[in-house]
Image 1 (cartoon, rainbow, N blue to C red):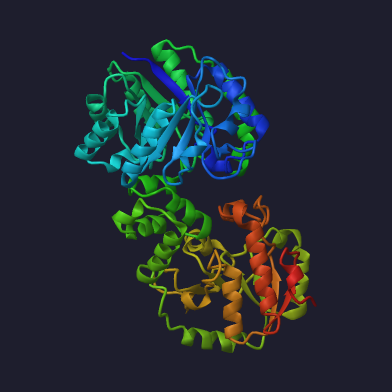
Image 2: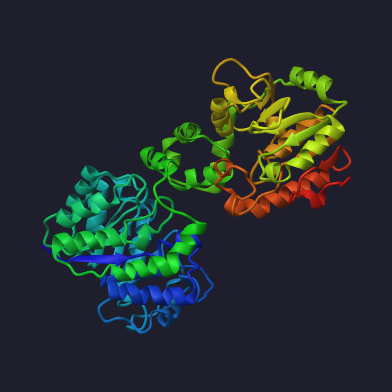
Length: 541
């Protein structure tokens, strides 16, 4: 049996979580603590981009890495990564002199295999240990993978990796690729495994690989606390403990606990990672995980809708992500599957016009001010005798005349609560993207005519409802419970109703709604009944 090496890639793969902004002190401290753990290799970051900051593990050249890893531990192999999707000029890679990284890992997709080969050739010629990383190894046919291995054998690589880029490899499939690599790699090359954990297969696959009998050395990647994009990576602390118990190794797990406590916990509180159903769906459907991440950040979809949307993407498109394509697929899904286009809502609008046009309308959102400033709302109701419309929820203690629904996720929650609610007899105004489980809604408005395609999040519920109110001729609107967005999601009285994208989009959403309110100032009279982050842009009365 060859030797098993642990490679920690917290500072590189974990950096997708925090834009690689660990801070200079944290980078140095994590490197020192990992050396105390006893890991054989530390991947310190990407060799990528044009700007250097000592606080970030994204390095434009190998020379600027030196100061962050000094003094180098003699027992540790230091690694930097070159990404062929955004390669740096090779002149930035100075010949190896021992002061910076010891090895360079080159990653490339199948369509850039030849470019990857040339980059690897130059890395080897410059004196660095060469780690070859076949991104999305499962995308290769057996014949293609064998041919690729034979091609790179000519470079005498130090380590060649099987890579589960989308976290979808189950053990049988993974071990077949390992056996192919073991049988076709040049003698002396080590075999590596880089995992993602969307299907929770990382630990089981790593254990199976560790137990696989081969004379080759093995490199197994992991991160502290499993830190990594989406569902994360193999947990360093779990696998080190497994190796200690089953292979007689002596990794010290205590420094990993300190790394998490001192540096990663604070990041996790702001940007959590770990197993999640959207990422399970991406792996189960052989789809790039950035798609569910994008949709969770920008649109209100139930898990069933997310699954249907991912299935609606052509298989050949699922693995190649871009935000532009993601939005195009979403819009196509809404039009083709949810049939949001072409809804004739003229009768619904006319009926609402007769009921609302000459009345003051009170719109009630799910903000915490609904409870904190309840007396203000009651006073407003007494003074104006408004038509009350709640937005994407049914208040338990304020009678409303209508409930406005603009996203299916809120409808899925609401339809179980509504029968026992005092608003059970309120009429439902729904946009055409929301489909009723049985029967039909009282009013259906054309979703396509209410969204704003010029902005990042096209279907803000308040903006959509205000557009509808203007269409039917309402002139006076009172707003309660529209507190504006907070990164802590403390603007919701019920945290379960907070959207996952609020943490990253709060400032943008507040600015967007303020600008919209300012743009309709001449069309409708807005009065805030409760405190709101939007208030500064509206006409106050």
